[in-house]
Image (cartoon, rainbow, N blue to C red; front, side):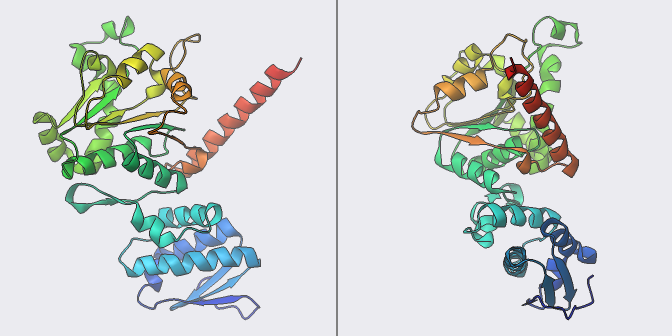
Length: 331
């Protein structure tokens, strides 16, 4: 393993001595990750690594090492998440430069913090938001839909491209069950809006978020509060959009005013409406599929950026759903 250079046939890669250690990671964790994911053997010493494996896998490993090494030289943090992202990009989009991928689509938020896409679909998502005023993003939980949309909203507010950010989310139990909860309406629906607050605090910090909310530059409200309004010069994010009804979705989409941008996020496999109710997100995605100026981005389990087990959990549920569909189709 690391520290012992093999003399067997393989490929030797020379790296910049000033960035090699940053590329290897703590206790060579980045090299171990490449070994595990590509099925190659990697030995590192000083600024040189020796690779052993199939030619195809060696090509991918060498490309990742050289290009991530160049990024490390520019001060980019190369950690396990960066390596996993590089692996996905290198395999799915071999023509794409990793340097351009990591630096060409970054989002600048508060205090100059840079947020980078963690896979090809996240990159497509960020590009869609930059280039379209209405974006539908559908996929499993944990794929970064809300966080990246929030990062883009903060960037737009900082750049004065919009005057305010509006964050909405349906409170699907805003009827009978919600009435049993203590407090006024705002206190009743606040738990439903917590994920939006969490993303906001993570990006700009609690103090600045509080100031922006107090000044009215950021508004967080349940979807029902959007009725009758016109949202102009605003960056609007509708989270958990799969839990809207078709009527609610139509109401929301017709709120947009001049200079506004709207992002609709949801996971169509987790619809919490009644068994016979139709999801407004699914309905609108079909109705507006061919409308020019609207972007549609789909995520899958490969884009999950939470704990590695989450990908396997999503995979297991997808497999169960496929088996269920197969059983239904049998005579």
